[in-house]
Image (cartoon, rainbow, N blue to C red):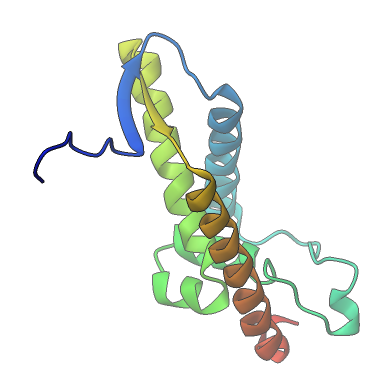
Length: 147
């Protein structure tokens, strides 16, 4: 770069004295506990499907519980096959739980601050919307397996 300052990164990492995201931490720890329950006791005996599932309409979350179960039992390919969000949720929950444990033990909490311009935010929304639609279509194409 010539004649200017370096562009400021939209992502900044820092350590803080208190958890800046307690609600996210609580959800992640609850997810980790749910994953541990899946690993210990297996799939729940009741269906967790949405109301349209019985009519054959699959949503982007269909197969998520089985995907999480397969992920926590080490069957990653099968987990990804049922729903890619399952293994991603397990990994995210594990990372956030590790962050919480580190914060509790060290009294220093890792914080990630993301600064989004309007343009980046619109792009993020567009990518998320397309991802949800694509995942919904994918899950609908696998309706026979997900019933």
